Length: 365
Ligand SMILES: Cc1cc2nc3c(=O)[nH]c(=O)nc-3n(C[C@H](O)[C@H](O)[C@H](O)COP(=O)(O)O)c2cc1C
Image 1 (cartoon, rainbow, N blue to C red):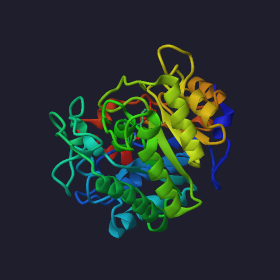
Image 2: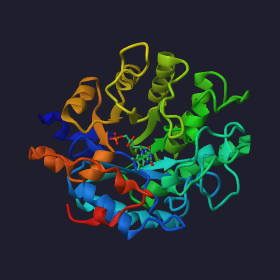
Image 3: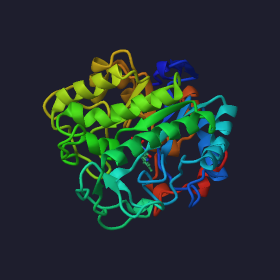
Image 4: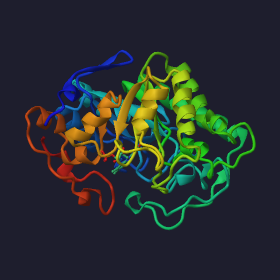
């Protein structure tokens, strides 16, 4: 059964979306070696807006020519040329009456390919858990990162704000999503076991959240009244089962401080977003975000392609539903839902052996 609310328009900080279905950010390592978006990427992204998605959130885009790049063939927005290349993507989405937000990302310790520097930078000099992701051209352990100095931190913040300016002014994106989730730099600062700092950037949850809030402040100052939000998760690409050490108290600090910082939206992601966030308790991260950031637009993601689950998180306060893998299988998902048509199953072979865009993803929808 279709949840009809999902196809109704929604206004996010003055930008109107034709419905509440968004494409979740998905890295596809398909840019040029020098980080420029391509025609192929424009076509890949176009299909989602052709198929009816109100909003597309791009893959994680690196922000500076220092430590932010995470993978080979990842797109960047670190200079005017890279920003101009993104216009191919934004123009085509706008031509189909879609909106598109740039996801700005700093990989921190989880960098497995950076053509600007020889070593990753992180809150503390600790080797990340797990192994590099093969489908993004990685292999073996992550390298040992260096602990960031005050100057490195200032550079990272400046990288986000300059990338945001280029995203809005040159690339013509409609908004900015700051990647604060999934184990990358901002999440490394937030996480107690990757942030062992004893200065103002480490310690309590408040202190560990400080860098994310400084990035929000800098981006807001740089671009003004344009939709700006932050993606938040517990899980990490290299630590899937992670739960916040401080449980619900962390949720209160994280969502409350983002709300106080004046973000326009919070994007929460969990493996199955409708489930309780913590083993003890029955409240989802969606509910907690709604509770502690009551006025902020809420995007929910994680296994929400069935109408029942989408409805259940909307009842808990989500305004927009972001779809990842099921959007790869069904770039025309909104159109199918409106027509009561069945969805195709996601086939993971599309992401192998490398997660780059495949020719089948360029066909007509
Ligand atoms: C191939 C692939 C690449 C991804 N890249 C990113 C990314 O760049 N940034 C991000 O925040 N999440 C990324 N994700 C996570 C998705 O946005 C989403 O959270 C995840 O797929 C769960 O949603 P789903 O159940 O609808 O697929 C990626 C997921 C996949 C499958």
